[in-house]
Image (cartoon, rainbow over all chains, first blue to last red; front, side, top):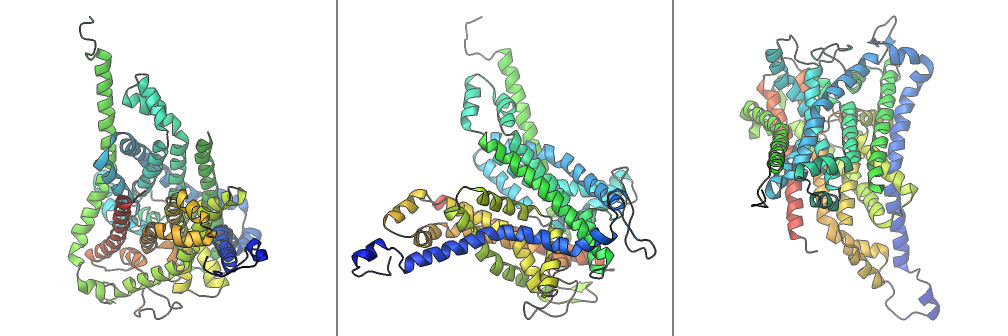
Length: 309
Length: 293
């Protein structure tokens, strides 16, 4: 606006390429680069993790052993075994229990905050849920280690309190606030005219919630559950500290297990760069990346589905 | 029959009861979600409260980390967070400006949005592997603050992007139209009208990112944070201690740590995170109250 304040020729009136125009184009390019950087970073993550792990996939890995053997013994000098079945079972059992804990509570809390609570109560609850979501995972792991561990030993008379139960509850408490926020968003996204129509037909409040609001919000709620699962799958520090970290296919809630993520966190520091063990850990990383990518992709598609419909 | 048209029928009363029942049930569930966590926080405070003092914050660990304070971890976290912010804020704000002000509704924009969701969804330990593969090895930064901070920056980029995009989109479209009608270019409009109206919202997002970055442990474990170093970092190429990793170390890796020491560390860490988050929330509420449109 300030670049050419003076008189201009007739031709210049039609040519708007003054300094401001060039600055505008430059900024447009810069912010575009910022925009696509997100894509570059996601691709970068895949490329660099694959680059470090691919040697193992090609040379050493026996795909059948990798996915079906319950023995993870990478430091065995004669015959190291790289089977992630027990680790997958560990991650799955902990995530599964976490969802059993988190789904009912976060759904109940979302319904209460979204449909029942009003005014100040609603605001306070929303802030509390947001603050709960902010507690770092290493603190949750510490809570599992120092507070839950003795409680479980005392209540259930088991020798070790670091197990599926401990990590599942911790992970459930961690995932619940996020799932609550997303579910509440989904409930709020149901248009008020749906509620008004149902109430005009004489439905009571809870009938409206169960027969109208929840069915209409079901995609968003499913998305919330999927994101919770992804969170559980990818959580590292809390499961490292609370599961007991022993390679094991669990038979009860009181068995110690080991998770995929925790294995990487615990072992990467002790492996030599480029060794089979090191590359195997990166291969687990590729596996984790692909799984969470798929979960996030489907959550996005499901949530998007409701917006269009 | 019929003498009081509006008297509650049996069905009405039953419905009322069911309604009240569900309300109580869901209310209880909400409380059950919140109360255990408050109890746990209370317990942290009870067990670690005795550790808190200026000495604890401002002295070095001693006796093999079984005593003393957490100065190097505190300073290290400040380094890590600051360098991470320097990298992620410009990129994140640029990305948000693109998505809010320029991006057409097409497949590329959808892919960018999907990438942002995935960046937030990739497990933190995979971010750590990426940091090792890319920054530590490929770019040759070694295990350093730079490598760790860049890893953290990429991991928390979605926080900045989402918060900034929301606050940009909260600026009414009419403001932009008015500015364009005066002959301003897109950038002039963004620079003079949109950003000044959104800057406080962006700041809220940045505070939130600081809080996220402070608590992250896995991404810095192998990229720049170490269990112990007696030195404060002098440049971005140094290794450093970090609050989050320090909690993990004193809780699990060091023998003979007195019980209350890790509680003290946990309390300081969670205090930092919660204070920043509360600040961000309070700021957001203040802004909402002040909004003129």
